[in-house]
Each structure stands twice: as C-alpha cells, then as structure tokens.
Length: 242
Length: 293
Image 1 (cartoon, chains in turn brown, orange):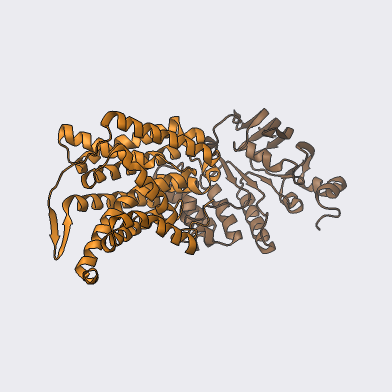
Image 2: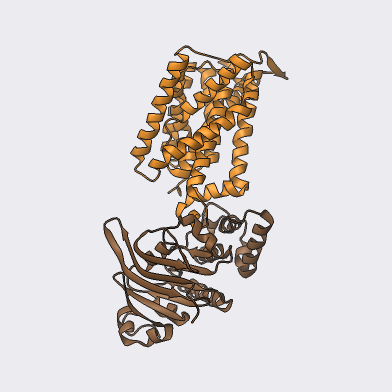
C-alpha cells in the first residue's frame, strides 16, 4: 500500500483536565474515504479538531504527507492541503455566499486566481451560484452545508475533513449531502469524515474506525464493519439500518 | 419658539448636527470594530482620540501644520501604535472574561490621561485654523467644521468599503463572526486583530485631529466622549459598523436640535435619553445585531 497521506499515532488530547483521547491511531491513504464512528463522547470530533489544530495534543504524532503537523499554528494547516468542513455547517452568516467562498480561498493572494477558484466551486454546486449574492445566513440548512463543503474545496485540498456533515439536517438534505460526498469520491478526493449516521458513513467509506471512550475499538473496511455483528450492536443501534 | 420652525434655522441645526455627528460616527465606528472583531470594549478609545488631538496640536504649534495635513502623519502613527498595543497588551486579554479586557483598557486609559496631564497640563488647547465660514445659500458653515465633518465621513466610509470589498476587510468580518472557522480558512486571526486595533486607533486619532480644530480640549475631555461613544454603539447595535455610523450621526443631529431648542446642558444629556429610548423600543440597537455571538 502507498504511504499514508495522514498518519495519526498514539494521539492523546485533553481539554483542560479532561482527557478525551487515549492513544488513537488512524491512517488515511490517498484517494480513500475513511469514516470515524462512535457514540457521543467517543472523541470522534476531537480527533479531527486535533488534526486541524483547533485542539492540542499532549502526546503522539500527526503526520500529513510525511510532515509532523501537531505543533503547527492552526492557520498554517489549510496551506498544507487540508480542507475542513466544521460541525454544525458553520458559514459566515452575515456575508454573501460568494464572499464565504472567497474566504475559503483567502490564501490565494491573486484576485484572478481567487476568482477562478470560486467559479470552479460554482460549477460544481450550481445552487450556490444561483444564490451567490444572498447572505449565507438566509440559506437553508442543506444549502449552508453545501456552502461549507464548497468553502473547504476552494484551495483544492489533498484531504477534506468533514465533522458530522449530516448532523441536524432534514432527511431530504441528508440524502443530498451524501450524494455530494459520493460525487467527491468519484472525483478521486480523499475524505476523512466523522459521522453519527454510522450506517450511511460506512456504506460510503472504504475503511472505518470505530472509537470508544477515546480509544480505537474496531478498524476494518467499511463493508466489514457494517457486517460485523458487534459493531452493529454497539454502533448501529441494534439491527442497524438496512 | 416660532423661529425654531423656520426652515433656515432647522436646516442650519441639521447641518451643524450632521457635521458634529460625523466625528462621533468616526470615533464610534472604531470602538465598534474592536468590539466586533475581538469582543473587547476598549475604555481607552476616546483617549486614543485625544492622542490624535494633541498630536495635531503639537504639529500645529511646532511645524504650523494644518490638522487635515497632519492626518498624513497622525493616522499612520496611530495605526502603528494601535497595532503594537494589541500585540503587547490587548492580545493577552482576548477571549478572557470581559472584566479582564475592561481592566486592561481602563489601565491604558489612566496611563494615557495622566501622561497627557504630565506633558500638556490640564489647560484647554485648541488649534485655530481656517477662520471664517462657507456661505451656501442661507446656510453658514464654519470652515473647520465643514473640513472635520467631510474628513470624518470620508474616513468612516473608506473603512466601511475596506470591510465590505477587500480580501483583508472581509477576513476581518469573517474573524468577527467565527474566529475558528476563519482560522481554518488560513486566516491568521492574531494578525487580523492587530490590524483591527490599529485601524480603530487610527480612526480615533483622526477624529481627535479633526476635533482639535473645532473644540477646546484637555486630557480629561475623553471622559465625555467615551460615554457618548458607548451610548452610540448601543443605539446603533453592538459590533455593527454601519450602526455606529448611523448612531453617531443621529446623536449629532439630536444634540444640535436639543441644544437649539433648549440649552446645551440638555444637549449633553440627550445621548442617554436616546440610549434609554432605544433600549426600551429596540434593545438590539438600530441595526439590530441580535446575531452577534
């Protein structure tokens, strides 16, 4: 197998006195979709917050494309090629759709290149183009999630990290967002996602990690995890979703 | 009372009010920018204004510079001062409980006021330039007031367009909405805060330099202004740049009318009356910043 794009080893993270991660291990290879599942409090979101620098690890290593990034200033992470879609589809509500995307391309200094990056995302999400002059706060939840994904794609990242992309969306929009993730997969993008909708995440993912109380519990292919009765019982709510 | 309904008198008061209000607006916009970007209430904001006023006075007394010309020196110097102050002091209280930043900026205020008293004493100063008035039809506009008002409006609108149109200005708004999400867009929030505080200091100092032409001031003058400034940003909407602009103009006009109809003492109190009114009718301010987190 190829060298992992992202390699997490022995990761420990604490918020103040409360330790959340106790030695998490995780790999993402180029072109892969990796899902992290687990109940609330398992530390799923903390893993990716630590990767993007919004939480600080106390131990362990995070290597991206061979480079240790766990001590890097968080605003330097996007330039490495990591895009992030925050939990709760956070957009800049008081800015237009177009300006939100432009913020995703903030690191591109040249105006014309920034313009091209915005146009590329508009081409991929025609709905956002229709609403480009609207304030992002006036979009529906699903459209805001689309915008958050578009913003994360602005720098054409090598890895896109999604924190609970379907959380709090209506079923119709959950379908829409998963369709978009399938699209991203088809484009050959590398995705790392944390998702409470474990069944759908594992259906989409090449591989999955099931966390429990800040430790690795199971890791296998998405299909194998879906078929594993223990995983189904613990993570998919009994019989799980057909 | 009858002559107060005379359109010429009303128009004259309106013009005077708008010109004075433009200075309030410029000052309040800076205070609101800092609050919006880093959720810090800068008690020393009006003292930064007086730094600008005294700088203009010194440049006039030594080099004979007109305060409008002196802006070319005062504004960049104040920006650097604000940028540095953010880096060495204010950064330490960002994200801390409000009391920490109130105490820190109160400390800056005490320091600046007393430095001012030490260097300049408590006598009132003024910068007498541009005697005389423009006469437009039946209206009389004193030249320094016209210049101060025009400069204030131009600078406030300039900063507004910077925030609305430029990449850096948009990044500043992004940081004020969601600092973490701005960070993951690659925006260095610390640098943005330093620029924001530098801009606010520059706006305050510019307001001060303009003030020097039309008011007499001492280092203690800041007290009146900071209180009015707080009233303005609450009237306009906390953290809302345009709200501060409208709030400042509104206060200027209302003060002018109240001063014209009643007395100037009443005019001094009207800011707080307006504040109470707005809080009763529309607690989020004119430009309702209910979504400010």
